[in-house]
Amino acid sequence: MELGISGKRVLVTGGTRGLGRAAVLALARGGARVVTCHRGAGAAADDLSRELKELGDRHHVVRADVTAKDDVERLAGVCEDVFGGLDIVVNNVGVAGEAPVDELSADEWNRVLGANLTAHFLVTQAALPLLSEGGAVINVGASAALRGRPATAHYTASKAALIGLTRSLAKELGPRGIRVNTIAPGVIDKGGGLGPPPHMKERLAGMTALGRLGTTDDVVGAMLFFVSDLSRYITGTTLNVDGGI
Ligand SMILES: NC(=O)c1ccc[n+]([C@@H]2O[C@H](COP(=O)([O-])OP(=O)(O)OC[C@H]3O[C@@H](n4cnc5c(N)ncnc54)[C@H](OP(=O)(O)O)[C@@H]3O)[C@@H](O)[C@H]2O)c1
View 1 (tube, rainbow, N blue to C red):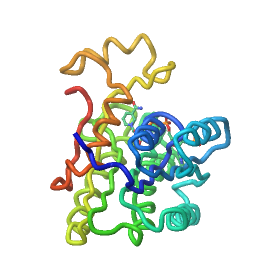
View 2: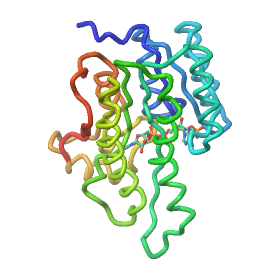
View 3: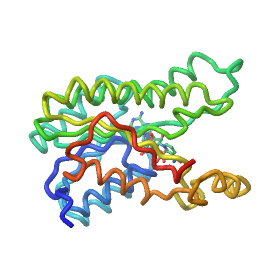
View 4: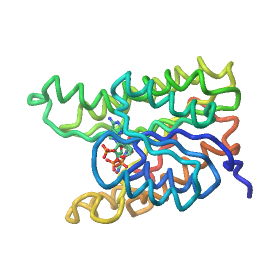
């Protein structure tokens, strides 16, 4: 089946590691043109650039902090320069956080809200002039958003707020032909020791209806669906990719 991804111009935030990296590579292999960004120094960005180079000369890895408006504007400028516009924005950047509420500092609250919510707003706003009819914004949230967990008030609040942001933007941008949806992963084992600690895996897998943790491919499948034309009549929704927790 033709997904209609080939040739699409896609911005994926936070594409050098984890789910973002898997999404960038799947999109590039599917024929999309991708700009992605990362914040930190380190080998991950160089590794991704090398891997993308093997897939063609039309992908770009940019160092930009999506919680900083100036960086976001520069990132949008790169998308305009290299692609002349955008078809898809994947707001993937997000950070975890754990602190009991009586020890949760305002700085830590702002760090988590900044990466998990404000960044999605800043990037979407900066990308809007580049998106035209048929465009789509995909936010990456978390299925924990509507359940809650102890010692993660800031994380849960940020991911729940993303659902509201998605609903409102879908209504506001629908008349311009732009769809906005959220993908909400559950507990994902990213491989290479980048999942939950071994002693918790069995218990967490047991909480899912499907009896296993998610994989990066499980989440990327949902992203490709929202990037593709198969989701052309879907907007404002939050799709849990959590095995039925
Ligand atoms: N993994 C899970 O089990 C899980 C579950 C539910 C939801 N999610 C959500 O899925 C998304 C991806 O999670 P992940 O686990 O794949 O993340 P990850 O492995 O920690 O990777 C995060 C990526 O984002 C980049 N990044 C972080 N902060 C940034 C910033 N301010 N500006 C630009 N780039 C930034 C990182 O680059 P640097 O290394 O350079 O900072 C990295 O490329 C997040 O929204 C997360 O909340 C994940």
